[in-house]
Length: 127
Image (cartoon, rainbow, N blue to C red; front, side, top):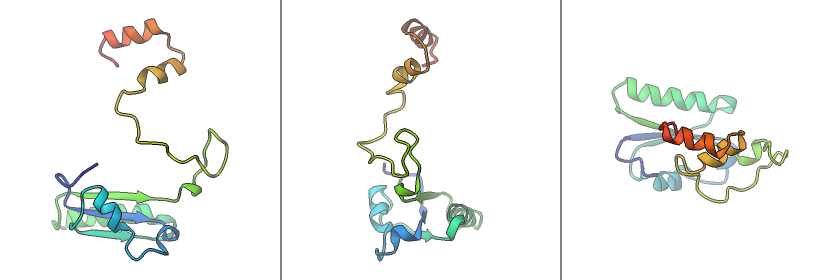
């Protein structure tokens, strides 16, 4: 996802354990999202890192320094709990997320809708 056309700077919130062995961990991330050679700041602050990243971005915009600032959050996957496998370490993501609406039918079927109801929703422009 290249966001360089609508944002001027980035604030990255990162858990210090992720970045402890990297001199500049945000650099590869900035390249991936199209923010190379644009200002970026890493924020790490114990359990309040996300809030401080939002505050830093807000301050940049409120001061007039930038009109838009992207705030990114990074956390170790092992800090999450995976409710499907009921483990502390979720499975590795196998690919990109689905496109908008790509798995709507599957989700509706799992939620108990039948094909007639799904088709009716589609005819009404709901899905």
